[in-house]
Length: 336
Ligand SMILES: NC(=O)c1ccc[n+]([C@@H]2O[C@H](COP(=O)([O-])OP(=O)(O)OC[C@H]3O[C@@H](n4cnc5c(N)ncnc54)[C@H](OP(=O)(O)O)[C@@H]3O)[C@@H](O)[C@H]2O)c1
Image (cartoon, rainbow, N blue to C red):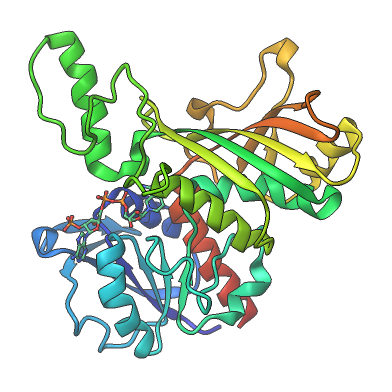
């Protein structure tokens, strides 16, 4: 079997650290790994698969030595500058940033949903936004069976989705609550501890945030429903990890609730946790460390002719970023 060479860009970040863990677990036929970060972390030693590696600074020449795959998790600006260089040298890039997601010639992939699109890449494949990934895993089987008419998203997103500095803000908030000391915010415009911020990513002219726009546009692209009515309110909450989402869906077709739950149960990547009487439903604390999307509180929306509400939770760093990227590479390797 062919052995591959992989570059991990942003190896010292929140997504990069988890990507290393997922790569260790998956044991793909990759014989060479190179870890990149900014100048700041260059020289840092990291242990990976029982061996010590030195983190290298990413430069325009980094891809000259030849790579089969690169996972980029270092922000949009780094992706915009370096992904095309990597791709031009024959490397397939899986990019975690939003830089290329809506480009027509860049497939936006969730392996459980649209794996057939992977082959349509010109060297760059985009990983969707974390909150979109978990939503479409649950929505795709329902769209196939009942044809979705409209989606209303309300999200409850963990601070890990904002990277190292987001986690620091919540940690500092918790510690300060006990110690009464002052602290400086690293990431958010207001304290996140004991608070909810209806503001993720930059504000747009139309009153939405970029995170909300990403959820709307990426859902349409992945489901191949460019005109689908979708709306979203995205909120940062004081949870360390795993995003929770309330999803209200209206369908064109009628459904039986039992059959709908069975449809979700049979779909790939989904675990149903749904027994309100027994207090069983998806929770962030139980989703951490898993790649599945957890779905519960599935119930008819009696305010419309054919619709449901459901509660969808997933580990945003694993399924929402690192695991999804590694799963894409696994699919490519398996198809070679
Ligand atoms: N967190 C999530 O839930 C999530 C989900 C989906 C997608 N994403 C996306 O994934 C990317 C990384 O997110 P994160 O949460 O891991 O952020 P993070 O914790 O802030 O880590 C950023 C990483 O990027 C590296 N980096 C920064 N500038 C660089 C440069 N010029 N050249 C090379 N490396 C550079 C950093 O290296 P240093 O150590 O040297 O600073 C670090 O390894 C972002 O694009 C984010 O939007 C995140």
